[in-house]
Amino acid sequence: PSTRRRRPHNEQVQVDSVLQRTVREVGSWEGVSIHDEGWIVVLRRGRRELGHLHGDRLADLPFPIRIREQLVAAGMAGLHYVHPETGWVSHYIRGPQDAARVIDLFRLNYDRPWLAAGADWRLTPAIETR
Image (cartoon, rainbow, N blue to C red; front, side, top):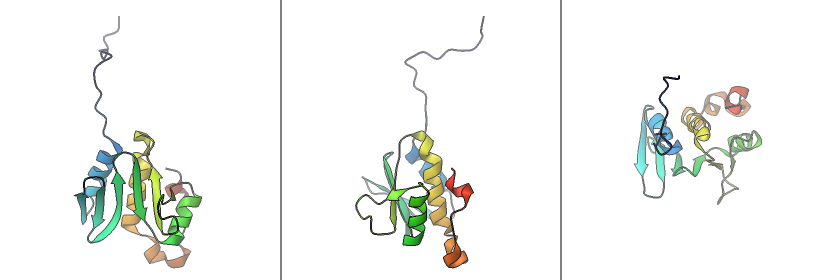
């Protein structure tokens, strides 16, 4: 006989939402502040917005247009749903499995590696495959 405890079918399993995981992770980075504005949660580094979350449904982040083009081409994000002509991207959250991708996008916008590398900066395969 198995000694493993079986969970009753009605017992809730606590799983952090993408919003909770993102706020906890990104909020722990130096200089990041979190602003709950009711219908969105905005994450800033100093005065600069890193991006915002519409609950567990959608993440919107601002990038330079040339970086946005690479993110969209790599399938990491889509054009912003309202302002597709700008550098903003939207990432539709399908479930908990998207937390790592959302956090990666915030990390990319936090680190801004293209500033040091200049016009030659390109997404690396390590960033694209998460």
